[in-house]
Amino acid sequence: MLDINRQLCAYCGGCVGVCPTLALLLDELTLVVDQGLCNGCGNCVAVCPVGALNLSKNAVGVDVSE
Image 1 (cartoon, one colour):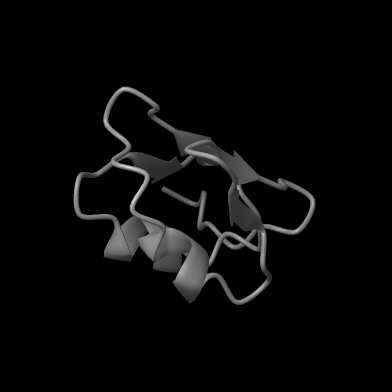
Image 2: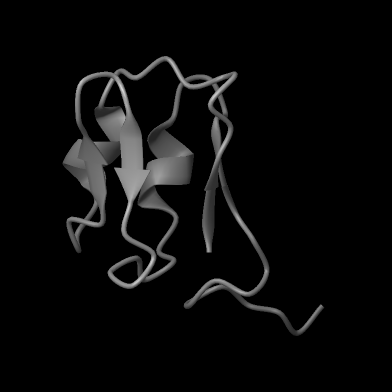
């Protein structure tokens, strides 16, 4: 599951451009994630300049074997 910290989000749209499944949408200064489309790849987390995105451990594609 992708979590968005709306307090930190700069609504720059960088995450939208790197999402291979088109799970993110920036609509009138609101970032929306379709959890059903998110594959947990982490591209959006890596590109976020303010650290507003976080993948929780139950996200698809996230290794929970720790």
